Image 1: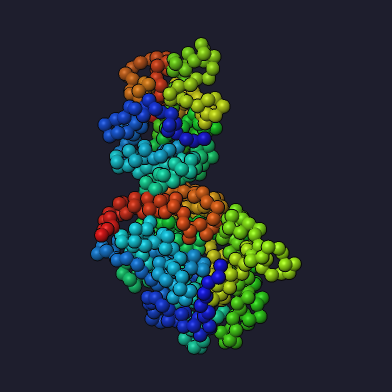
Image 2: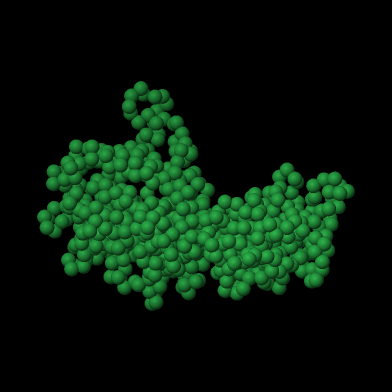
Length: 397
Length: 219
């Protein structure tokens, strides 16, 4: 489990938020982002990565939406952790989202901490990080910001939008907000609304952060502290929800960590404890605590039906987007029943939809892992959609 | 269970049309108007949907088996995992021009409810099924004294997914009580070929191995 972790001090954190190691677009003050909270936010900055080449017709763009603790570094070495990109199994040359065929764009979400405007970004009015003065944002705000990025890039219509978890929520919001701009949609391990249980889990995480004295009411940048312990506990709790009982048992069982007997103390006797502590510690080195509050809040607020008279199907009525909905058998955070609800709504709206449930014991995180069946389904779905869109096959050398 | 008799249709398998498609599926496909919106309930590995797509049909599918669904989706077909007995109620009225139930009726729990939903969701329903009134089946029960066992129906009674067999005569009665009008009926012989037209129903009921019915809502 041991690995070299890079420790970001607070100055590094704000530097990455303001001057990220990726492409970046800074919108002028007269081009604000209209937020659901009723605020025109400016100046908006969006950090993003692209892979592959945009074709002459500008018809092969795929928007990848990242999850809660993901970022724009999909298939390149992460500038902070030095680890590989988070979706290298899915995206790349010859991968299901084939960068020899498609032009892949992944922006950091609004409220994030890797270069798109968020609580760790500098507030130009004060010259200090926004902290809790940053407005509360929603999934719809994230999508609106992404639409501004596409306008800036001169891409009118996306071939596909794909993402898992919070990324899947963005996919659904894209199809609802901009149906004419989305040819194909791939929401994976997603839901049309965040369940009460999931809001409850998030609240535990937020309370853990806020209970850490180093959080300082969100003003830890000014105070020179960092709520590491609180954020690590939040991550440990959340991480359990991304796995499954079966996967934890398979990986760790009741095995002891570097010892043969219990120590009769509160050390990390068990491997699973050691693993979770490691997950917590490595997370705080790359993530901003306030960002975690904002992004979990955005997920809690997500309820697609609420914007459409309480009927999800209304969000998709008349849409010509083709959907591929995917869930995993052991995912108890976004269970298959949630994906089925998406499918029911799409059917009720008469939208073209495929739906597959993949058998795995890896839980919610299965969308990030090596799941051959997932890759076959995404490849096949995109292949069919590409033919319908008239995209040329990838040139192989 | 909603598996099409995929492995069972060995004899019909042998009977393939010019395009390499199973003849019973060609008969079904010929009943569908080009360009129509179609729902194939129990679409198996998607062979019929693929055939329909070559004819410009906007096809969707439902399949119970996860392997079948994932195979279809990987082929680029619009197929969802679902159960004819429970999931048809989620579809709105008149969502499709044709709703197809191919070699699946006998595996549903409530054939009448399924048929009624098909006629609600689609303007037309197409149902194909193995005819349990075929003389060889009758002979096995009458003389052999055991549940029938044929190349097309290879399961033992205690492990068959087919829980609601019917004859052509029985199916016509279901149409009557289920509010369906028979627009067209085609009988297929043991080799999956069309039987000559204009035969009386009793003849079909005795000699057809399979039947394909095109139905519409009555009144």
